[in-house]
Image (cartoon, rainbow, N blue to C red; front, side, top):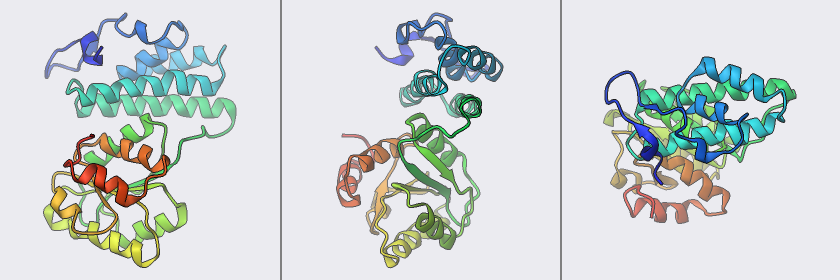
Length: 253
């Protein structure tokens, strides 16, 4: 059953809203369901109350993995199905992050993530909405995101990769005049002996350009880097990942 099948859609009016019982099939836990529902609806006020209540009887990690991340995964599905757009997705992501903060404070430690991914918007480009979406989907899949921000110089990106050793680097470009930063970053990484897969996306990027330099993986849509990061965890190298995504124009096989 598609996630969109449980929604009533009110296009361009406030937001997509759900029936209060829409997602009951996803969990039979009455404590964690309000956490999931608050994330899905991007309702920060309800989220804080739901997480507070859940932490009275649940371990913080359970609230994160079975409540917050599970709710955000539904948001990712709704994005892929064309039900959710940028505002709903970013609101849900911000709501999830607030819940994670509360859980980390409760347990006095950071939540363990699946791996580290670095994201940035390329040098000369200040349009970072695409990057924010990438961050949201990566986090919903359990990855730790190191967000370098927008208009990030190539040398700073390379330095961050050397320092943090991520399993994946993501670069976003909107303007075609800034595309060269992607290639310079890839070649600079190789000069340092670093062969980290480099997911490249944004409206200014196309698969032919990404295929023109090493390490490049074409991420046509914002949710694709989360799948690429999972492939990195499975042990695929950048050539194998490029074969999977670049030959299919960034669409999952």
